[in-house]
Image (cartoon, rainbow, N blue to C red; front, side):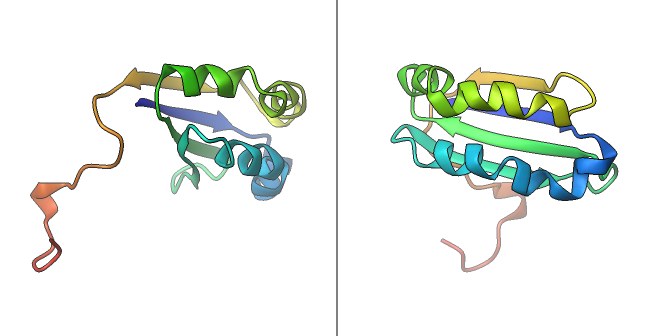
Length: 110
């Protein structure tokens, strides 16, 4: 799978509304057949920073995502709400879901 984590620094006036600003893009991406997950989180340390954790089945699914109409629309509509260009980590990993964090295993959770 292709695993991507991106940090978005949102303009302070838009930070509380970011989930609504990105809602159409989020819903359309989650509906893609090759999308495994597409999840936003807000930083506990910086209320203007959102972290996007996303994964796509494979390179073809990732390519379909960046070639989609909703991705092109997001390229136009999201940057005006940002302070800077998002930072990203993009890797290909040999798995299709989350692994368990064995160091923090919960007894009875098999």
